[in-house]
Structure formats: C-alpha cells, structure tokens
Length: 100
Image (cartoon, rainbow, N blue to C red):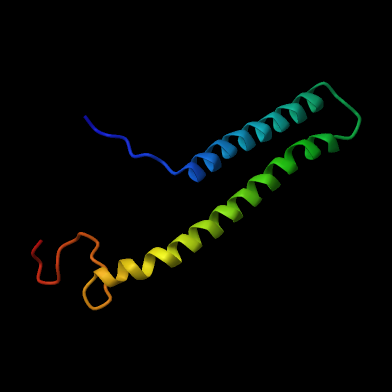
C-alpha cells in the first residue's frame, strides 16, 4: 500500500484558506450577477467590502508562510550543502561519470 505523505500544518491552513477565499469570491460574483439581472439600481460596494478583506487576510497568511519558509531554508540549506561533494548537493541523480 502506498503511504500518504503527511502535509505540514501551515500548508493545510493555506490550502483551506484559499478554498474559503475562492468561495467568498465566487459568492461575490454570483451576488453581483443576481443584482444586475434583477435590475438593482443601487450601488454594490458592499460586495467589494465582503470580498476584499478575505483576500487581504489570505495575502497576510501567505506572507507569513513565505517568511517562515525562508527562515527554515536558511537553517536547512547549509547542512544540506555540507553533505554534498565540494559544496554541491546530491539530488539522488546520476553521478558525474554517468553511473548511479
């Protein structure tokens, strides 16, 4: 049986937040469509006020995740490079002479 890799919790949070933001955006488009179809003559800034904060929150989450990943890579990269020959990492591919 194939074992599923466990995803990092921060990646799951971003994935679910993207699903929620997409649903809110689609809901905003549907509301705008229904308002126009029913010949609503008022303004629709309330739709923008509903959709924009969700994207702002997603942007903040993405920025913090990127900072977290950058900090982790600064820690992991030197140790990874030390394992390679002459500073070059071994990616599990064929060696320079063509043999595995």
